[in-house]
Length: 467
Image (tube, rainbow, N blue to C red; front, side, top):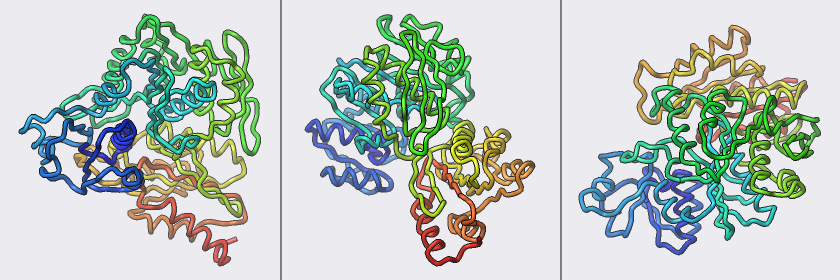
């Protein structure tokens, strides 16, 4: 496996290993947590790419972060070793003959996929699942169950350098959940229309005996779903077949009600925020369509612990709460900050943001990004992660974003390093009020998650903090 340490590639490697295949792989940087998980499973890893890493395997799986010029890829092509993309391999080895339920959309895929799988597991259906994040209930990104259903996160990103097709097309789902649809992945798509075209193609392969469950909050999904030959059900807050309403907050959980064509279900969940209530409704809707009993749905929702790095509380002490979130798109940033403002109405909300994804490092959302931070009291932005090259005329101007925020909030700052961010937190945090710090990145953010906890512990224990 070339590029084995990515989440999807590493998960596939573990699944193949569990099935009894001999698996090995390489990556540019052998990095945790995936490297640790793979090594614990006994999978040999090579650091860096070299042609002699590829001897005479029966099959090579090539990750989508790998391109021509990679010495291992060149050896595969020159010696005609059989190769597949991750999506093709997943289909060939695990999806054939299963009742596939895919969850696709710009936001909410991982949470909805993991929750739906957990509901079906709670109902005794023993599903398999494949998620782009760690499902807390299983401490895993996958599970190979014995039941008929395979619940899979349907990623719209392309499959490989030799396969410029979204991964979800290869999964050939029977049932489909569409959570949202906005512009993203500016490195491979020209505009929203190009992404919508692939979603139309996805909907077009859902069989007439299948089901499409879609969010009514997105007009383009209404249009795309309307062309399906399958059964169609909408969900949302307004005019929809399945409607949700927030009944109230408790400290540990939220209470929501989902009205369906067959009655209302009252639910409790450890998830907060309207985008999560929409995710819950999406999973509940599909579970109802698949015939799961209301009491089992309720039990599944109430016992679901969430997905790591999605609104995950990683620290709570002396009135300081630190959350980690995967948010990088402006809609996701605004949603998680709105949630914190609603859940902690009297708190000082800190937004700590790293533009790391291929889209967030570009200027495509530059003009609308400042408004996404409006629920925050303090905004700390790190200069973008360099990663793969972005043309100068396409790069995000973080100073311009900061100045846009300062038009309505003067407490917005740009920093070049995590050290600088932590120094600012140390100098500016006050413990005479509640503080909620939301760290947002789809990468490692130079270890800030652990380091900020150490810093706050030190400040609390030393008393060296302004009050």
